Structure formats: structure tokens, C-alpha cells
Image 1 (cartoon, rainbow, N blue to C red):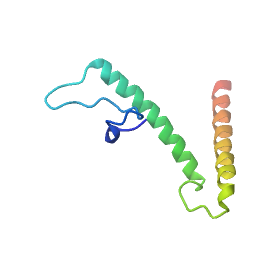
Image 2: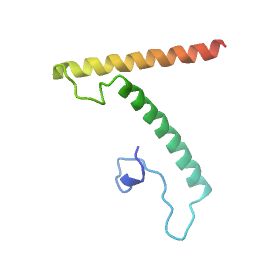
Image 3: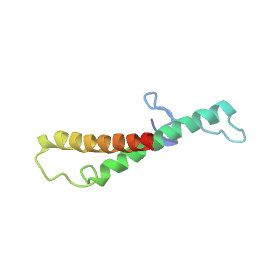
Image 4: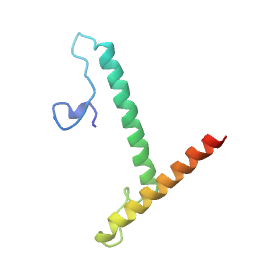
Amino acid sequence: MGDKAYIGDDAITTPHKKRKNTEISELQKQENKQLSSRRIAVEHMICRVKIFRVASEKFRLARHRYSQVILAVCGLIRLRLNRLVSLTINI
């Protein structure tokens, strides 16, 4: 997925762009909303990973440890999200 900067690349899903002096259809607007809502969820997950400063700063351990550390961070995030979901279901 990408934003309007990646229009033209076949491998990336991009939103529909309004042409000069025309409007986009309602279907295209709905597709843009769905795409943006998925992108927002992905951006929020990236933000949660960056909170642990593994992806946002220079990695100071050995290179072969990076995948183990990033998977551990992703596991902690998933555990926290599952806990939050289960708490909201129980309320």
C-alpha cells in the first residue's frame, strides 16, 4: 500500500486521484476511505514498534540478533493488543 506519491507502480495499491477539473466517483471515494483506514492501522502499528526504539534508532547489538529482537518486540505488542481486546470484551 502506498499514498499518492507511488501512483504508477503496479506492485503498490494507491488511492484514486482527482483529475484536473473533474470529481472522483462515490465508489472511488469509498475505496479511498477503505484504503486510508487500513493505512492508518498500519501506521499506528509502526508507531508502536518505534516506541521500543528498535526500529527508530541505531541497533547496537550484533546484526544477526536484529530479527530476534524485532520479533520479540512485535510479540510484546501483539500480547498487549490481545490483552486490551480481551479487557474490552469482558466489560
